[in-house]
Every structure is written in C-alpha cells, then in structure tokens.
Image (cartoon, rainbow, N blue to C red; front, side):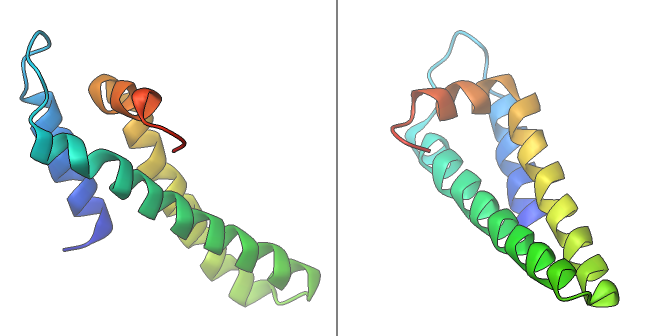
Length: 94
C-alpha cells in the first residue's frame, strides 16, 4: 500500500472514533511510527534537493523537490487531524 493510502486509512479510522472515546491501541500504535516514516522520507528528499541544487543538477533536483513537497503535504494531513495531532503531542520524542 502506498504511504499516502496508509495515512488516509489511519486518519479515516481516527475520524470515525467518537471524541469522548478512547483510541483503540491498534490504531494508536500506528500514528507515531507512520508519522516518523513520513518525516524520515521528507528529510531524505530535503537532503537530496539541497545537494543537487548545490551541484546545479536542476532537472534531478525538481524530481526530488516534488517528492519532498509530497511528503510535506502528507505531514500536513497529520497536523490537520485533531486526534492524530493530540496523539503525536503526547508521544515521547516524535
């Protein structure tokens, strides 16, 4: 499954939980690892972009910039989901 689809499914699952209910452990345990995975991939793409721009590899840098922006959009979806963001705030060192 594509990363974006995993995030979409997780956030939909969180949206279907009533606000006054406890988040099931199987869902709660997915939030931080998935957020970390997306963050790590964004960081890798950011490093690629910076390196390629320094070396004036414009075409290649555009490809990595598009990937970087994709991962930033996925991270923004975590931020927009209130329950996911609360779980991330409570997590030790995200």
